[in-house]
Length: 420
Image (cartoon, rainbow, N blue to C red; front, side, top):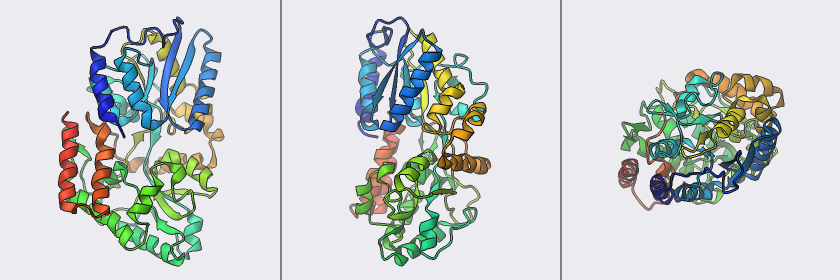
């Protein structure tokens, strides 16, 4: 995540800023107008505006103004508004920002303020810091392996048993697919997302975070880089330079351009990957390290709804969040865009409206729920983790640093970020 340090600095100023907060509802002066900030794609914006319209239809005394941004500029814009005492009444944040925002007094404790009876209580805990419910999860994700079965079978191979396959099985299969297609279709693309490392480390019994610091050992980070390097060296997947070109957005995925048979993405991205590729894609458990007793896979809220600690429109803001997570009408519009809903009644109500891809996600999540590690809220400073890990990973894959040196740099930089 870019520019988070600047955004965090602005948040520090916000704590001592004027106490009026977002009391004017974004400067409109409307008694019951609230501002809702969120990030995403054009399709998310359309879905959200439709949900807002439905809420206003059911609550004609409340006006909701959507404050939309793309992800790259979202936190910087949010920090600027917060520092100016003009924080949105309802704010979307992600798990890596939760400890930061709650500790700065930016968001309110929602315990008893939003109905949570029908929400998955284990997931709900992922919105808590020091026993206070600062955030309500929008829905849940996992980070599985995505496969184009047709591409695998076209290469004369079989889709593996995802309950037993290992990392070596995965690389060997991907290598065969690449070879069969003469390099036109890679066996796999790979992802430098911290979620991938977290799963790999979890299989070795190491948590990503422990006691406010990085819990992953230098050796495990190096072993993970060895795995990525093996994918490149065996031509199971493309070069680091090719992967750098594709970026981290689903619409640029090699699965979408039909240049790869496998790839790791968040489960709520399956629908976009499926539509973008025009192919039928499926979800698999991630491969395991030999002898691993845990899958390493974990649940994670796609994002959260939070309410400004300084809003003077508390009742309206609470009613809006309650609608988003508990009302089947909201669920029928938003579907899985912010992860599969954690409200069982909403899921039951909208199941028939889910796309075939989302139906697969629902079935997959149900099948692996007993294998998933519980959600852990990262400590303050975790917002920088993706950038720190990417810099270290690229330095190794592009041959600019040795794994030993890069691992030490990663652990040092990561812990420095977490200690701020």
